[in-house]
Length: 236
Ligand code: CA
Image (cartoon, rainbow, N blue to C red; front, side, top):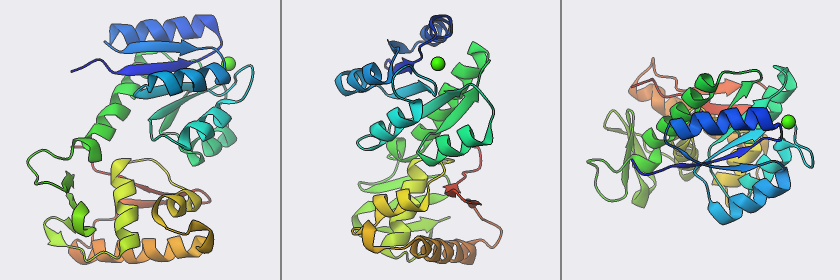
């Protein structure tokens, strides 16, 4: 495995040191920023494969850093939050974080989480080429045919509309991540401003119907009330 670089954004020196040490032991290459501003600069220069982001930073909040990164990048982001408050959790996931841990945490717990997210994303679209032909990606029971905007479940064609295809691709690229309706519209629709929230809901509904037509018990798309949707893949 080549060295994976992780950017750690944390202003408290003792916590930062602990995290950096734990990640180095695991074989990651680490960089460290103490402010949101520094984090954005390092990110632009270094393009790390993973970002660990403290919510409470001295200049701008971790949420703002996340929002800024998400404008141009799909990098996995793990939040460090001080409280297990519902607000941290909701906001964190809605703006496109992959997971979060609440302080205090053990270094072991943190590295386990980083490893899990990287594994999960690797199982997703990035590594999907194994055994499949060009333009074909297999993730779990799904196969996507990128050149013709189609997909299959257990080898059965799903006859997807372009929006259903687009959403399924986004979900399979980030299993478990919650996407808000706005995010899905921005990622999938050509003219997101012209679409309505209920447009997304309508296409989710038809997508679910097509999955159910293949397997009536298979319902991988979870609705997160007030937040959006996530696709969960069974652990393999
Ligand atoms: Ca802090």
